[in-house]
Length: 148
Image (cartoon, rainbow, N blue to C red; front, top):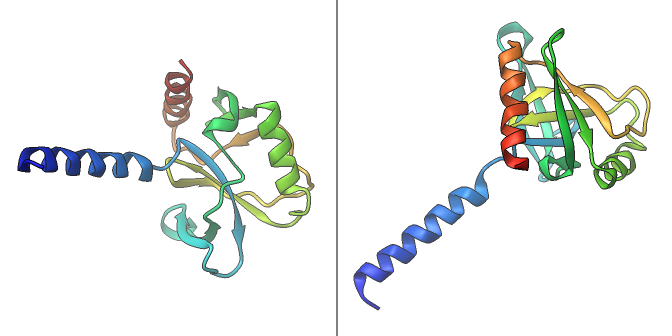
C-alpha cells in the first residue's frame, strides 16, 4: 500500500473515532451513591452549589428516544417528550428507583440531577439548570436540526 493511502486511511479511522466518542445531545443515566466500575464521576453546578456525582455509563434514554423538545421560559428549561418506545423504556428503568437520582445530561454536561419521588416516570419530563433561556432554546434548536 502506498504511503498516501495509509495516511488517508489513518485519518479516516481517527475522524470516525472522534465522531463515535462524541456525547449525545441528550442522555439520561442513573446516579449511584458510590463509585463502581460501571460509573463515571461528573460534576454538576458551580462554586458552593457544585457536587460530584457517580453517573452510570449506561444510558436509560437518549436523543434517539426523544419525540420533541419545547422551551420553557420560567424557569429556563426544556420539556422533553419521549417516543412511545422511549417512554416505555424510561418507565421500566425507573420503576424501582424511588428515592434514587437521575443525571439528565446535555452534551455530557449534567444539567439536572433530580431525585425520583414516585416511579415509574413517564414520557414527559422537564430539564432545568440552564443559566439563561437562550441555552434552553439552543438545545431545542440543536434537536430540531437533528430531526430534519
